[in-house]
Amino acid sequence: MTDTQRRRRQLLTATVIEMLADTGPDGIQMREVSERSGVALGTLYRYFPAKQHLLAASMAAWNDILAERLTEERESGRHHAGSVLDRVLDLYTRQMKAFQRGPNFARLEVELQTSDDPYVRDTLDERSAVNRKALFELMDGVPAERARLASLSIGSTMLNSLVLWTTGRIGFPEALRNVQDVSRLVLGDQ
Image 1: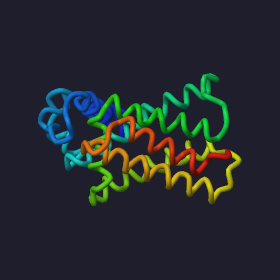
Image 2: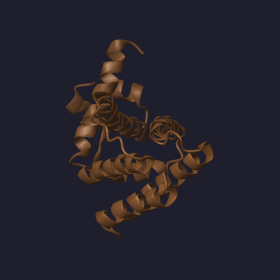
Image 3: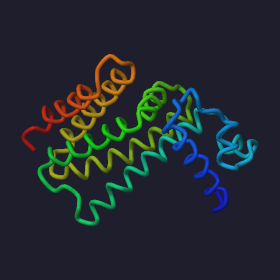
Image 4: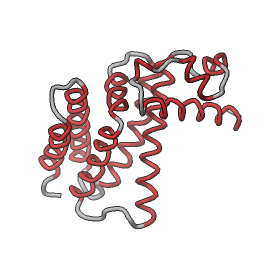
């Protein structure tokens, strides 16, 4: 992609991120994204031939914003040092609270995780790889197999908690507590 194409693509995903502050994933319409972003509808479809592709790219862009904040904090020394458990709890608590502030992102996460579209799966797999790398950095010193199982356990609990929360079956405090409790269970002595 050229720089201009990259900027247009970023403008489209930024527009969707703004829209998700007020509108659920089902309410996002390609024509409205085009109008709000100022990017021609035909150009939008060249970048994202399906709405789910645009939503997945936007979710990855939202994740990148959160990841950049954490990186800046770590590099500036504001990052929480503490034990492995403290660092992992801090990361997942912050992620869950980001979903609490933006419940439409939680709904979109659940929707995308169940997609069978290859582009969506690949986009989420790339995002997961970045998140896993950051998590494993926080678990420095934890044996590789235990770190893998901790990542799997906590991540699965987080997704399940998001499903239960976004469908109204549990409240947010319980969703957050589930993630924190499993983190303590699998990393309690770290």
